[in-house]
Length: 154
Image 1: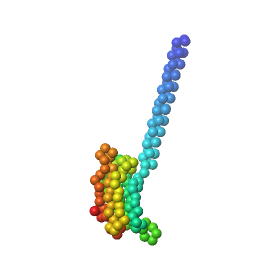
Image 2: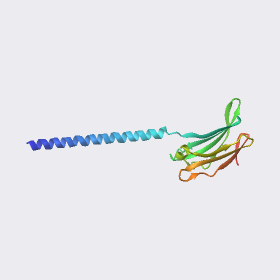
Image 3: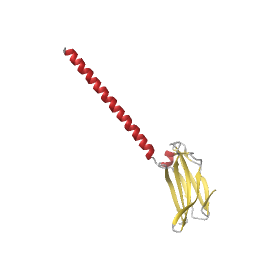
């Protein structure tokens, strides 16, 4: 009789251990899924990566735009603002490179902007070079000119 009680107690203990482990595993999986879903929804959709004010007349920004289809891809928007009546207004914008042609994480990380040079002249030359990946390095410089608030390939 003693053997049967020990065996039954052992089976009950093993069953409780398995149920507890299964419950903890399910809770962990649920928390991980909720955390991942929360991270996806909380991730920024765009991020300013460089900005410059040219003599008070123009403001130029580079913004990384995360792709809605691919969380690893991004586009880069170059925007020109003119200062009129005490406010900044956007008369023009262009896409730097191809749409979704950049990688989000290198573009929004440390050292993403390899070159962003501007000048307070009319027309104002702009040069942009961005990090493709740490192992590949920087893109070839893209040259633009801002004339009367409009962006032109330079």
